Length: 148
Image (tube, rainbow, N blue to C red; front, side):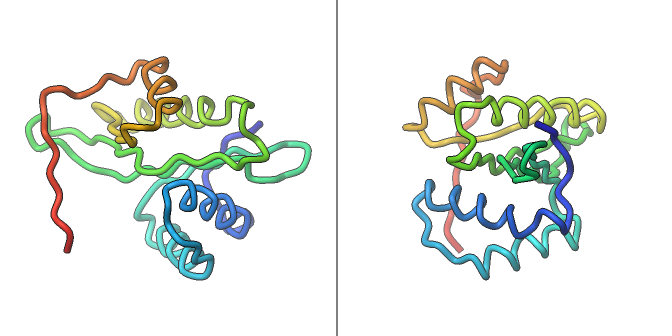
C-alpha cells in the first residue's frame, strides 16, 4: 500500500470510506454533506489528511485526518488525530498501523511535541493498537465539552 496526502482524484472514494467510518460511529449517512465538508477541509487546508491506497486497484483503503493545534505552555505545535477509518474491504491488512506510522513521522517532520487522539471507551481494538504504537492514556487531565 502507499500512503499519500489526499488529493482531488481520490475525494469521491474518500467520501465512501468516510461515510462508512461515520456509520461505525453511529452517524446517519449524508454523502453530499460529507463531500462538501471534506472538499472544504482540502480547499482551506484546515486539516492534513493521509490516505492509504491499494497499488493494484488504486482504491482508497483508509484515511486519517489531523487537525493542527498548539501548546501555549510548551510553545510548540501538536497534532490532533481526529479521524481514522479503514474500508471494510481492507480490514485486517494493517492499514490503520501504516496510517498511524505516517502520522507519527509527519509529526516529527513538522517538529510537533505530540499527537493526541481520543476513542470510545468500548473500542478495545483501537485501544490495543494505540497502546502497541506507544500512545499513552492521559490520566493527568479531565476533558469537558458543551454542546453549542
